[in-house]
Amino acid sequence: MASLDSQTEAIKRAKVLMVGAGGIGCELLKTLALSGFQDIHIIDMDTIEVSNLNRQFLFRQTHVGQSKAKVARDAVLKFRPHINITPYHANVKDPEFNVEFFKQFNVVLNGLDNLDARRHVNRLCLAAEVPLVESGTTGFLGQVTVHAKGKTECYECQPKPTPKTYPVCTITSTPSKFVHCIVWAKDLLFAKLFGDKNQGNDLNVRSSDGADSSKHTEDVFERNLDEDSEQYARKIYDHVFGYNTEVALANEETWKNRNRPRPIYISDVLPDRITKKNAKVENGSTESAVSAMSSLGLKNPQDVWSLVENTKIFLEALRLFIVKRTEDIGNLTFDKDDQLAVEFVTAAANIRASSFGIPLHSLFEAKGIAGNIVHAVATTNAIIAGLIVIEAIKVLRNDFHNYRMTYCLEHPSRKMLLMPVEPFEPNKSCYVCSETPLLLEVNTSTSKLRDFVEKIVKNKLGMSSPLIMHGSNLIFEVGDDLEEDVAANYALNLDKVLAELPTPVTNGTMLKTQYLFNFCRGEFDEEKEPDGMLLSGWTAPADKDRVVTSNGESSSIVTQETKESDEVDIVSDKHGVVGTKRKLSELAEKTENHAMEPTHCKHSAPRNEVPEDVGDNDEEDDVVTLDENPEIGRSKRLK
Image (cartoon, rainbow, N blue to C red; front, side, top):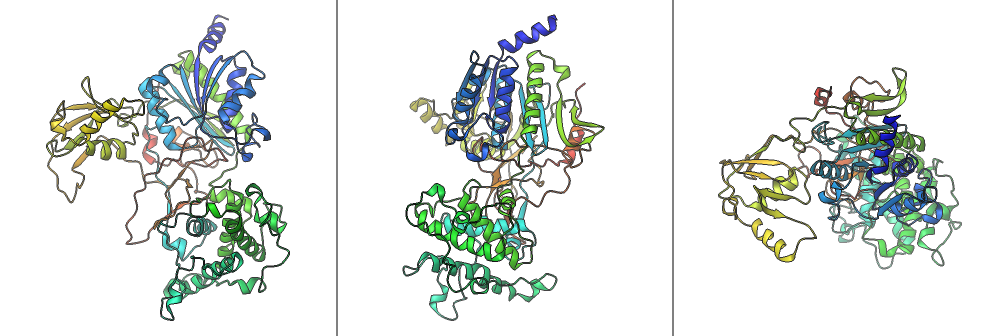
C-alpha cells in the first residue's frame, strides 16, 4: 500500500514534457491525464489536417487548421479540468526550448516523426540529464525505449542508416518497379512542371537533337503564348510518354536483356480533343475543391484507373494547376496532403508504368508510396502510449532495474505480441553520450574556429546551435536570445585561427561542446584530408537502406529524402522473430512501396546525402525506419 501511495505521489508531483501531439501524442496525453499526472507540457509545431481525424481522436472536423497542441489540451481539459496542461505551438528546435527549459522536467516523452528532431531532443535530454522515453509505431508494429544518461544507451548510441538510393538512369530510362515510376513522376516530372525552375533536372526537355530546326531544340516545358492549357497538357504528355520513350528505345544495347517499353501518345489513348464531359471549373471554384477526380466523376481512391482514365486525370490535373493554381507554379514541392498533386503523380506514374509493362496502382496505393506511408493503426498507438506511461512511472520511481524496451509485434513470437527487452548499456564509442573525448587532429596555427564549427561540430556531429567552452571560458555560442554585442564578439572569433583565440587552442587543448575534444597538431596530405582535420573516436552513420520520404525538390540527383512521418522509427522483424533488441532491427526485405532517392549511376559524382531539416511533427500516416547495423547486436544488456 505504501508503495502504491508513493507511486501516486510521484505521479502527482511530476512535471512531464511531451514532444508531439499527433497519433501517439493524442493517446499519450489522454493516458497521462487519466493516470493522474497533474502537470503536462506539450510541444508540437503542426496544425490539424483532415487526414489526421481517422485516428487522432482528440480532434474534430471543426479543428482542421488549428494547433494540435492547443486543441489536444482543450479536449483533455473537458474530462480532466483540474490538471495543468501547457501547450506550445512551436518547433522543439526553437531557441526557447534549451537545456534550462528541459531541466525543469522529471521525464520527457517523445512522439516525434523524424530523426533530426529525435536526435535534437536526445541531446537536450542528455545535457539536461533528464530521462527520455522514446517511441514509434508503424501499422501493427510499435516500440518504446527508455534512455537515461549513464544508465542506458542513448538514442544515438547505434548509428542510424542513411537513405536508400536509386540510380538516376534507372528512374529516367529503365524503370522496373512501380516505385521507380512514382519517383520519376514526383521528383522529376512534377518538380519540372510546378517546382523551382532553377533546380537541375534529369528529364529530357528537348524534342529533338536540333538537327531538324531550331524550334525543336526549345524547352518543351516552356509554355508558348499561343497555347491554351489543353494544348500544353497534350504537348507535355506526348513528349514525356511518347517521344522520350522512343529516344530511350534508340539505344539497342539497353534492351537486349530487358522488356522494351511502348511509347504512348495522346492520340493512341484519347480522341483528338479531351472529352467534353470533363467538368470545367475555371469559374467559381475554390482551390480547396480543385480535384481532377471530382471533375471527371471518379470517386473511389482505391479503384485502379485504366490507361484512358489515367490519361484524363493527367490532362485534367495539369489543366487545373494552370487555371486554378497559377500562383503556386514555380514554388511547389510534392505534398501528400495536396489532393491535386497526388492525382497528378498517380496518373503520371501509372501511364509510365503502362508504357514499361509494370502493374498499375490505385491512388490510395500510389499516395502511400509517394509519401512513404505505412497506414496507421489507432490501436497500436494506444498500446504504445500505455507502454510509454508505464516506463515513465518507472522513471519517476527511480525503478531503474525494471526499465524495459518493449516491442509491439504484428505476429506472436514466443506466444507474445508484446516483447520486453532489458535496456542496453551506453555505447562507449558513442560520440553523443560517451564521456570519452573525441580526438581531433588539426593544425591549430592555420585552421580557424569557423572550420571547426562548420566542418566538425555542425556537419559531422549534427549540432545546430553549438556552445563551445575552453575550460570555464565560453568562446562561441549562437542563439536568438544573445545580445547583439555578445553575438558580434563570438562571430569575430569564428575567423580567428585556433591558436590565436582569446583562450588559445593548441596541442593538448580540451574543448567542450556537448562532447569533449582533445586537440592535437597534425600535418595533412591535402589530397587525402582536404579539410585539414581528422576526427577520431567517432563513427559515421552506417550506409544502410532506410525508408524515407521526399521533400519533392529536384536536382541532378533528384531529391534528398528525409522526412519520417508520424509515429515512426519502429524496428521490427517481419515475423516477430526476436532474440535481442537488435534482432528486431533486422527487418525483412525492404518494401518496394516506398519512394526512394535516386543517385547518379556509374561515373556520376554522388551528392552529399546528409538529410535536410524538415521540421518536427509533420503528422500523416507512418513510415518505417529500417535499422540494420549488424554491429548493433554486440551491445551488452544492463544487469
